[in-house]
Image (cartoon, rainbow, N blue to C red):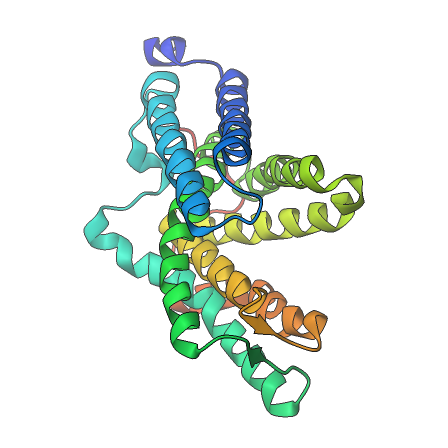
Length: 275
């Protein structure tokens, strides 16, 4: 065994430390939100939550890579910022293109209708703010932790496709647990299926392009569109059809779109990748 291997914290301990830290950060955020914020999740409360989560989650992963993994942060798939725009846009397109096609077809056939409840200028202004909030609160910290840190560490000992399943299970436990804590056990099955499916697609996108910016872009586009369509600023008479046309379609076709736009030539699905 090499000296470097002896100095590294065991894999199971590293995974546990980061996962437990993640749960603690989101628990702290929920406490702060209920103590200093409001039940309606107004913009100031959303900003507070985003700053708190990102301000703790990102340093946690940086510290874990430095002191537990003893590996550079770039090993998680974080390209140089000057090169990050392309895989990021691949992720955005992997969601936006199927979503736009699905919504256009559904609206054209009358399967789905959308009625704005506020002026379009208000909707667009909210969407711009939402992009910033979602990036800071969800897309960056969650992808850095789950598709970045946890999936990369699992890939050192497991085939990449198995590592995707592993991080998806952890993400499902994490996300579903938050919903059960606030809404009760009635949401367990619905949210469990949703979180698992979302995590699998995001994990596959990371493998396809080799860049963490791809799932970050997809995550950002997904949440901005979903929160825009399902907010009280927009109403529909057929929410299930809206979800199928504008959201589910993107998850079904995401990896296909990414394969055309930005899949690397040396994609490895079956061999562990030690660091």
